[in-house]
Length: 306
Image (tube, rainbow, N blue to C red; front, side):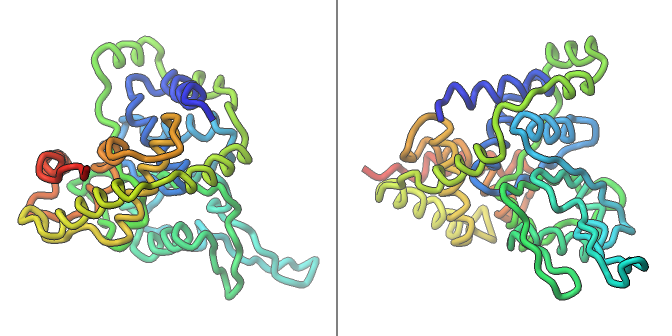
C-alpha cells in the first residue's frame, strides 16, 4: 500500500477532528500494528470523535461502551439468557464482539470490569460461563482515560496499562482549528459524511504485511540499547520489559510500512518511542510532559550503532 493512501485516510479523518494529524497517524500506526490505543486527556477534547472517524473511514464495525462504577463484566462480554420457547440458554454477545470498540472513561470502571476487558484484548477471545469465544480480527480497542486527578477514577495497574500498545493525548486544538470547530457547530454531520476508504479484509492484510517488515541487526541493537538505557537510568525506577521491546518493534514496523518501506530504521523508533514507552515507565514524576522530556534526552545519550 502506498504512502499516499495512508495520507488519504489521515486527510479524511482530519476533516472531522481538526488540527490533529500527528495523533491520527499514531492511532493508525497502532491499529495496523495490531495493538490497542489508550487516549488520556480531559473531557471534550475529541477522543470519541477520533475513534468514530477511524472506524468509519476504515470500514470497520463500531461499538461504544461508557464505563461506570456499577458496570459488570457481563455488560461488555455478554451473557447467556434462558429462552423459554427453546427451553435452553442462548448467548447474547456484548459490545466487545465488534472490530473497533470505544471504551469511554475506562478508569471509571471497577477493577474487575477493567480486567475482563483487558484479558480479551490480550487473548483475542472471551470466556463466558465456561465457553470460549474468539474475537474476529481486526479487533481494535480505543480506551479513553480521564486524568487521575478527576473524581471517581480507578487507575489502571501497570500490568493492565501494558496491554495498550500506545498511549497518546489529543490536546487542545490550535487557535485556527478551534475557530473552524466553532464555525462548524459540531462534528455529527461531518462524521456521517465519511465514506469507507477500505474494508476489514484490507486492514487484516496490512497487519499481516506489517508483521513481515524487516528489522536489521543494527536496528535491533539500537532497540536493545534503548531498552537497557531505561533499565539503568536513574530517572526511571521501572524500566522497559521485553514485552515493551516487542511493542516498540511492532510500532516501528507499522510506522515504516505507512511511510512506504518494507524495513524499519532508527528514525521510525524515534517517532513512536514516547507513545509506546511512556506509559510503561515509572519515574519520580509521572507527568506526561516530564516523562517525554526525559525520553527525548535518551536519543542524545544512546547513539545509533554504525
